[in-house]
Image (cartoon, rainbow, N blue to C red):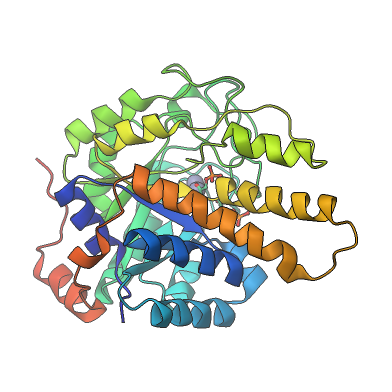
Amino acid sequence: MARITLRQLLDHAAEYGYGVPAFNINNMEQGLAIMAAADAVDAPVIIQASRGARQYANDVVLARLIDALVELYPHIPVCMHLDHGNNEATCVTAMQHGFTSVMMDGSLKEDGKTPADWDYNVGITRRVTEMAHYGGVSVEGELGVLGSLETGMGDKEDGHGAEGKLSHDQLLTNPDEAVKFVKETQVDALAIAMGTSHGAYKFTRKPDGAILAMHVIEEIHRRLPETHLVMHGSSSVPQELQDIINKYGGKMPQTWGVPVEEIQRGIKHGVRKINIDTDNRMAMTGQIRRILTENPGEFDPRKYLKPAMEAMTKLCKERLEQFGTAGQAGRIKPVSLSEMAKRYRSGELAPKIA
Ligand SMILES: O=C(CO)COP(=O)(O)O
Ligand SMILES: O=C[C@H](O)COP(=O)(O)O
Ligand SMILES: [Zn+2]
Ligand SMILES: [Zn+2]
């Protein structure tokens, strides 16, 4: 059994100076693809499911799927994480289905659209952290609202995300507030806003410091050196994948994502979890388009899902290598949830804030 908590994994990543991609999952093919990549490079993995993924695949199916993946690859530590939990219930039901980590995203209200105020975010995140830690489960919180520094718009693209115009203050996490937030909520990891957004359309040009504010990460890390930082919306949206999709009938306007070298810079400054969904969606879609275009008579899903899985495996492998996750699986001895719970109770896992 190699299920592992986010806290244990990110503590290890901090100790050895690497980052861990968190790949979103919605179905068996994505699960198999992630595990094949982790196995190929001996990396621990974070597999995360959004509320949408849980509705799509069904909690019971997802839970059994993760059991199966863990059984198939007993030497790979797997953290099963809830992406963008919107209230206490979403977090608790994830824990009931074997998630070892939950995100309570209190930066937005329950509707996943309306920016929340400080008291709401601290209150709900603190409640989830208390509950989760009793069971040894890890918690990621979020401070600041994801959205574009180019347009000032929230990131409404894929269902979750703020609607309408946001202020510069909302779009960039304030370092002083970050310190207070971690202290008051006791989260294990903190997602911050610095110009990334979900989906493919993050930037209209290769991002520089004006629209991808890596200096905010560096400042927060200076103030909170022991806190694991999380970058959402961190797909790189490779040109090559845009080209494949468009070559085979797709119509994706030219766009830019988060360059891998910027993420690597973040990893030097406390970024430990890097969320990636869009790149994998694009890798799979490109191959499905290619196969169906080249073989219009094809109707066996395996014929296009297998190349789609292989493309996803290739992308996951690249990120595991680029972030330094490769080669770390064998160095981690999973700590049980009950042992983690004891450590929270003893106070030894409380955030260390100067
Ligand atoms: O942040 C994410 C999931 O929480 C995914 O981000 P991307 O859309 O950039 O892949
Ligand atoms: O939050 C963003 C992730 O990419 C998950 O997206 P989703 O809510 O469409 O499943
Ligand atoms: Zn969010
Ligand atoms: Zn996200």
